[in-house]
Amino acid sequence: MTRPLSDPIPLRDTSVWSSYDAVTILPRVYGRARIKPLRYNADGTQYVVADHAIAGVDAVTLDGSPINGWRWRNGSDLTGHAVALLELAEAPDTSANLAAVVRGQSGNPADILADLYPRADLQDFRVHCRNAGLELGGALTERMTTRAALQFVAEQAGAVWSAGLPGLAMPFPPPESDPIWREFNALDMAGWSASCELAAVVTRLTVPFAWDYAAGQATQSVVLEAVAATREHGAREAERALPWVTTARQAVAIATAWLHWRARPLWTLQFDAGSAARDIPPGAWIEVSHPRIPLQGLYVVTDLDPGYGRGVVKITAQAPAGEAPAVVIVRQSAAFAAIATEYRVQLAGDSVTLTVTDAAGTPLPGARVWIDGRGPITTDAAAKVRFRATPGRHVIYIEADGRQAVTTEVTL
Image (cartoon, rainbow, N blue to C red; front, side, top):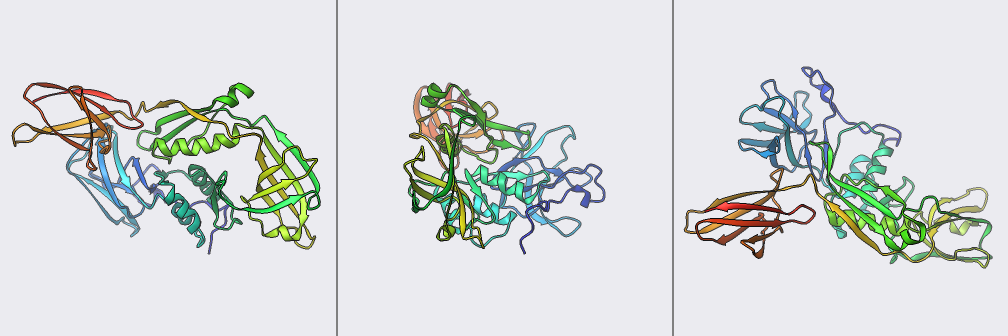
């Protein structure tokens, strides 16, 4: 049975372990996220990284530096509940900052929604997210209602949701390729009203993303602007946080679609229609043709009251005025996502292997490397490049998408 939307998400906390003094939420991890492990045993060598089984742990750092001598496993705690455990060779200092990069449950937004609010009709949204390459990464670490959790996840995916919506969630604005469900003209519409909202226009959007739960901050941000809209309406700034979005490409895609809708004056149309309009789902395109309505053309249905027993369907629809403006990236920052490098000289002559990672020790495949000004060489799937070099000092320059470039030196 589906839980009521007003019920809290059932998250456990450390009070289930009798020896714990402080009460901390046990994280539920989706996709790939960097989290702060919770100490589990008395000697400080065993930690819980998720309150469920996980797919793996990719890296463990202590005060930002990668460490060795650790292993992870799926097991159970003293209550018999499934947890993911991290075991260290020796206990770190209690003041040290321990962090782990965890691969949790599926990061497909549809799978996350289904975990929070079980539904059997999420396949269309699941396929959309898969085709868009959208994989979220984050952790539930705070109390919230089911409704708030669904709203949060939908926003991270650039989507809207409703318990009454077939399929629960859909991208918004909907793709222009979606069909037009119905056409309405003057004879089909009664009691109509139209209003235009200018106060909510946004022309410049700041998007912090890629949240680090161990550090408690976003590791990257991007600023986008609809330049033509700024010239017309002035600079109107807003922030939209996407902490579970992990890549700059996806953050830009979601923010661009949002700005295309919000950088223009938004018309809201309300009218009464016949009972045949009851089959129009929220989020569907309709086409409006009425000589007295200021903005004609395509609208998106945002609310529909079926009016059972009255024979009248009340429709609310919205449409932005004018053409979608071009959106440009004004600034991209990765102040918290520095690149670190590890290198080793292989014993077989002058062959050198360089591994490129971020500050958390996470490999960065696809990074571009220049050796003494020659390159670039692209790191392979294991974030490694191999090259031949003569003895002496060599300058290494590295770039990775969404991160600040770094220059380092090696002596062979």
